[in-house]
Length: 236
Image (cartoon, rainbow, N blue to C red):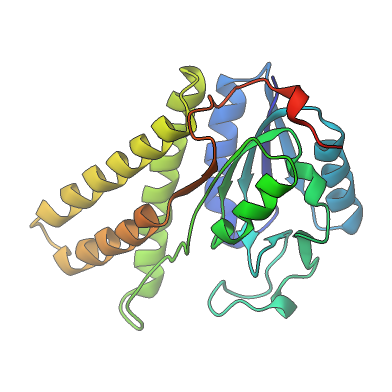
């Protein structure tokens, strides 16, 4: 079974390139990197590739907004993101390219990607793991750039480690969700106990990681393995 890693050219998501690189190197025979480039043709080709695939584990490392996965790119920062900020608009939604989910197992690291979970299942997804909001800071005007950078660093480390481990051992989605939550909890506790210089900053980072952790949701059969093969589930 193939593993598809979908990641856009986008400065706000650049920190997840390491995740893509490590998974690609470790699972090179199975891993396919689908890079969303800054043109409409790239978006169309990748959507078609996913629709044409009979099965697979799809890892989305993207933006999401209003029940849709967004392509690249964001203009400006991710703060207060609106439709107009996405040059290529809605890429996958209940009314567009929704067949990409058909026959797939899905991990979607994107803000409010849970909003798309039930639509993914209705359109043939075997199982879907998504997130609620993924903030990079919580407190306005408090070292936002520093905290955002460190949150991204911690998030990337947690996701990369746990995805790699889960794929290598073919965990179920339930097991992956449990491991992710445990890793977020451990990192939060470590940060909260650290009394060295910069404690206030570390507490803020810990609080952001807690928000991300609490937003993990599974739609569908969480007992399915990440590399579960079930092409008979295809609807189209």
